[in-house]
Image 1 (cartoon, helix red, strand yellow):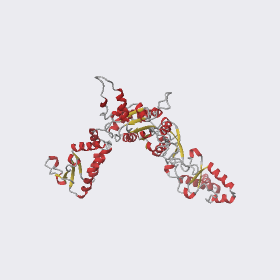
Image 2 (cartoon, helix red, strand yellow):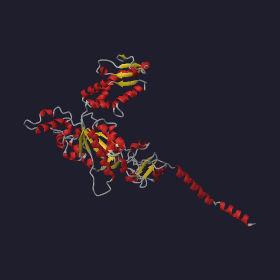
Image 3 (tube, rainbow, N blue to C red):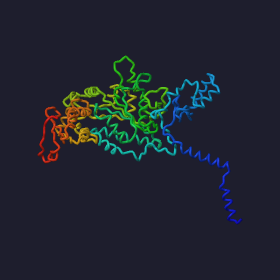
Image 4 (cartoon, rainbow, N blue to C red):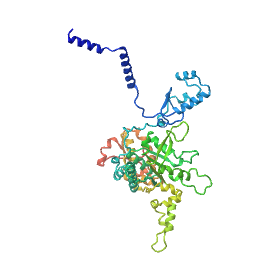
Length: 502
């Protein structure tokens, strides 16, 4: 046998595997296959079905049939209770077959199907995957924030300027809170303005532009702890839900509490004020910044809802309200300051001032019923102007999603063009102004005279254009109806017009 033949025999022997090696290879291949078949790490972490604590608080979970997770502490308490009832080895065998005996604490049929995602907490990111929540280089400057607000909100220049600066400073505070020895305070805001002037719309637009979670809640539903209604912590719970149960993202969000004037101190009452001053006192810790335990996926705390801790230190709070009768308090103060003499200001000149809210002071709001501790945690206070007829006309047609553009889009789906005369727009604004509910009245006025048009137009395919006139808005005439064959002649001014009610 030559050397080459001997080398081939050795190679063939090395290729052969012993039975033990073959078994190890098969086991390793099966393990690799099982690892590949495992699903990726879940986006949400498990919570105990008994104590409802999430995995990062309760520790490693024990999984039993029907996709149920129980923490080790609750499982130990369950075993202890079973031992008192005569727990035997046969019961252990039953557990191995998927049946847990003598457990009155858990109803497996009720728990089948698992916990919904809205009540599950998102897993915290590892240090490798963790990214800074706020990048100071990506924070838009105040003038850019205001320019973006101008595309959606008409008027309210001072309010948009104040909000842009406050939000910019707030997120700079979050981005640099770890740097330096100077601690910057929060920029919580209190906005005062008549109904329909755009308070809620401003906050919604702001949160949309910044791409941060936003929770809007009414203060009217809040009551003191222990009474029927929402607790103070339910405000933070709504923000957590808006952030998809991501605690880290929720802690950098915005909470807008509307109708804040409804929790003012009640005057001349002998009953317990469970929805007034006590709610203001309960909100003090939230506004300043504290760790609160909030329910996940529910508005109230109970035994079947998981709980988590949320720090409100970096949450921006914006409170807004119409504050009715605050004008009378301001007029009373201004009239007392009126002097006597030839150059004295007239007392009744304040009565005709439509924007008298712009002269409000902290003392006026305190007299209205807000406690000083509450106002001290809202350092930025500004007012919104009442809407004039010219502003209402601009609201009708200038914003990106203006009301007129919405109705034009609706008729465009029926291949009909909708137009408004200039006089008709001012007639709409005048009618809306008389309702005294701000910009909300515009939709009500337009819907009233557009009802017949939107009902009749789909009947006739020959209609190509509808022009709304002042007479039609004031119910003294009809709109201008243009047939399809005449739409092209309209620009030359020789269009035959049909001025009849639809």
